Each structure stands twice: as structure tokens, then as C-alpha cells.
Length: 212
Image 1 (cartoon, rainbow, N blue to C red):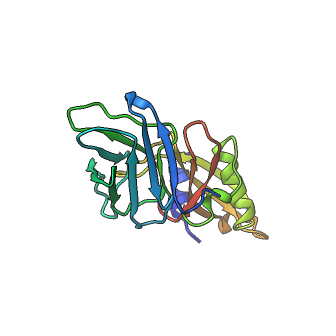
Image 2 (cartoon, one colour):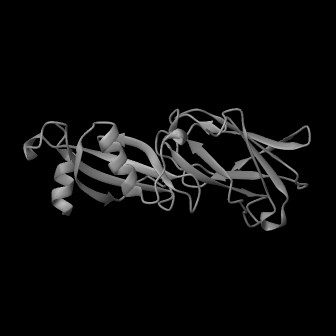
Image 3 (cartoon, helix red, strand yellow):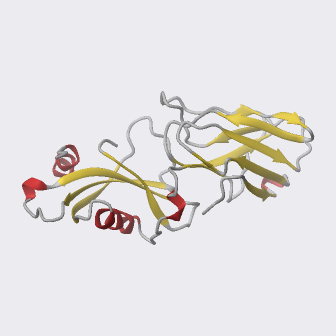
């Protein structure tokens, strides 16, 4: 039985994998951005190709992403190959969804499109049910994965060093009763992260962990 989330509660009360393309006129740039793979696995590299822009340089940033050591991603320069700007992003250290921004240089404003995201998911993540409210995701997980009964749930702050966008990811600490064990001493606890595949999209299950 994992007591950490219970103590915390008491203390506090399918996109295809071949590639993804999206065009944007944001910032006056008719940029077309392609990611391969379209959905990145944890600690896997992703190639970025930007075409449709005629500029002297190009940089990209997955906002809020960090590596396995917790170091924040920095603006990364692309190189010109066969008329398009290309680069390979380093492996992300956390699952989640990260808005991608482009800029010509450090002296120019950055820009983005509503559809530009680095998606770092486990297999089949996008095929799971979606809900209007992230609490619906928590209830779905308790009901369908441990087949238990939800006893308590509380929104939890992302841990220190976790820079993921809280408009796209919500973390919860929960307590639940396993099937056939209604006694409070048998309660289990875990942390559930929910996400939405874009601002304004419905909420889905990202992952469950014993620690946030």
C-alpha cells in the first residue's frame, strides 16, 4: 500500500506515427512544420522540418520541455537542407505536450501556430477516452485500471523543476479503495497526470505514478 499520496491529501485536506504537419501564418510567416515521429516516446529524439519561410536563420523551442536531468530545453538552431530548415530535438525527460515556438533569431519575436505541439506520450495514449473535465479522467482511471472506487482527489502542483504548461497538464493526487476492500486502511494512493491535446481540447489520461 502506498501511503505517500494519502498523507499528502491529509496534509493538504490515432495521430499517425509517420509525421505531423501543420501550417501557420503566425507572425507573418507562412511556415509549415513537420515532426517525425508525430508522437515521441519518452527519451526519444524528434526531427523538426520547417518549410515555406525565406529567412536567414531559424530556431525552435518546445516550451516547458526539459531533459532527463531536469535541464530546460533552450532555443535550438535549425540548418538549411534542400530548401527546408531541419534539426533534431534532444530526448525529453517527461511525458507531456509542449507548445512549439519558432523564431528567426534572438533579436526577433517568436511565433507559433495553434497546432504546433511536441507530443511525448506512451503508446495508445491518444486512443483513450476524453472528458470535458480532468476529474472525469481520474474517475475513468480508477474505475477501469485498478477497478476500484475513488475516495478522494485533489489538484496538485507540478513538482519543482517541472516546467510543463499547466494549461495543458493537470496533476492530481488521489486515494482509492481496491475492489473488495472498502476498509480505509486498505486505501491505495497515486498521482495522476491528465493532459489535453491542444488549448481548449478535451482531457485525457497521460500517466499514473507513485511520486509526482
